[in-house]
View 1 (tube, rainbow over the protein chains, first blue to last red):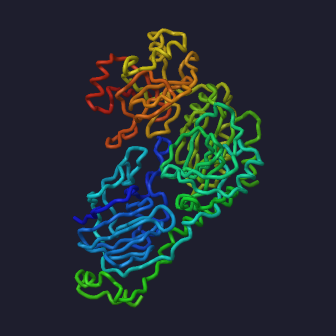
View 2: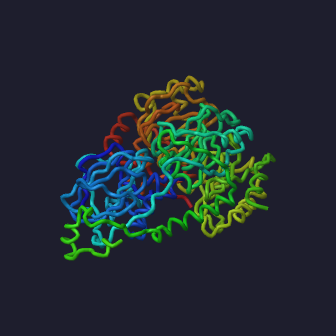
View 3: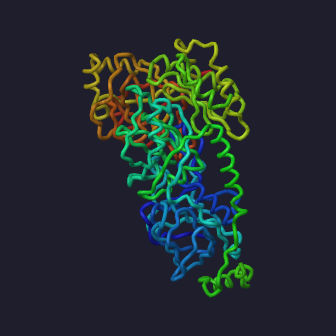
Amino acid sequence: MSEVIVLKAGPGLTVQDLGRPGRAHLGLSRGGAADPVALYEAAALLSQSTPQAAMEMAGMGGTFEVTAPTRIALTGAPMRASVGTQALRWNATHLLSPGEHLTIGAAERGNYGYLSFAGGIETPEVLSSRATHVTAGLGAALKEGTRLSLGADPDPGAASVGLPLDTRFSGGDIRYIAGPQTALFAPEVLAEFEATRFTRSATANRQGVRLEAEARFPSQAPSGLASDFILEGDLQMTGDGLPYVLLCECQTIGGYPRIGTVIAADLPVVAQAGQGAELRFRQISLDEADRIARAHDARLKALRTAVQPLIRDPSLIHDLLSYQLISGVTAGDELEG
Amino acid sequence: MTVDQMNQLSTSQDGGPEILPLGRDGWLVRFALTPEPWAMAAVQRLHALGRASVLPGVTRVAPSLTSVLFSYDPDGTDRSVLRAQIARLLEGEDWHHATPEPATRVWQVPVSFGGDHGPDLAEVAGMTGLSPEQVIREITQTPLRVLAIGFAPGQPYLGLLPEAFDLPRMTSLNPQVPQGAIALAVRQIVLFANASPTGWRQVARTAFRVFRPDSDTPLPLSASDEMRLVPVSGAEMDGLLASGDPSGGAKLELRS
């Protein structure tokens, strides 16, 4: 059986897929990849019909080896990656062969990088997903020495391909829609909220990201506000008047008032904003949000049309020998790009 | 009229339930901002009504304490059409005097009150003006309903207890209650899914686990289930806890 072995692990290394949607009414938030777009990019790069379970690397990667040749994809926050002395391009596929050590370092921008395998990680499913959900007690961070089963790569000799690097790793303008409690904030507070340049606090994890600003954004919620449904993307105002943006592993019922909900197309920008990155918020109408959501879904489906062969100098291909060992012929077409 | 214009109308204060957007795929019907007992009864009534009526595109109807969430498939569901259908569902009911439907699923759950299993029982007795024995009797004779599930996987908010139990949360946090803690405040009981800090007072404990990821029924409770707490001795509870059986000796009765 094909396996990946974790030789060294960063502190936030977990198995993630698209999570467990549709169980919030039972107290279980979606979880899954903090940046689902990165899993769709990996699926496009590896010609997978749907995103497979991958390793999510929070801030820092690790060192890995495999027991059978497999293509890998590196997506999400760009990290320094190499095999031996050969640096690997990010947002691209590479062949990894037994005996080689894949080393992934710190994120250069953004927070969450993803290491995907052509056959996917095949750990047992719990509640129809392989995703680690720490706050629910499902799974745990991966430690040094862990071995995980991989599905076989159906085509290890396939040409290496890449996608243009996205711009979602440095903060920016974030769109949100009104929610059930938006009216609990005075119009001037909402105006101030939209005029404020927030920075991402160091206080952040898969449950949520705290934002910093000089201004405060109090609500007019009655005392004893009933706890109600909350969801990922919600802009939750804590007692000190500064917002948290809830992420995929948030709780499902909460008692803090919320200004609105960040749309799914922009939530990866919040999750990936590095410490100190600037974020600004702008409310859009529900009709506009619906249009953007449809376009976002279509964009994820069409990612594979943006995949391009890597143009590489044969002398820089670290694993040329292993290509020959696997297929018996050189994969000449990929050398031409 | 656009959905956004309708939404502004719905937040105008006419005293009736509000229909509010929640995310890309939800309409939330909210009866009150604070946990009024009438609103919780209205939630139970609308939850039953919403599940019985098959609204096109609706994938789930789920209650929280004062609101009911209608989740729908955003592909192929018109947000504004669904909103109008929910508004029609709300017509013709006196929501301030709603009567919840009888439960179709009734749990009997063994619990042990006081001692190590309920360290705050005496304090609750003092605050309610009842004896510890009366507190136990009041709680165990109340047909509790699962008002909402959330915060942690499978974790139920149960209620409502008699008015004597309208107790505030603790001013300083209870640093840790164990998995299975039965803790109360504001006429409600929470059965803790996991060890947790809380502002609620722990009067009892159960071996019934509300989240069993490795079982065929990982999330055994459903909203609107009835739960009866059945007192057992501390020694019996120790045995149930030690057995590791996630059912904790609980029994489920189905009523049609």
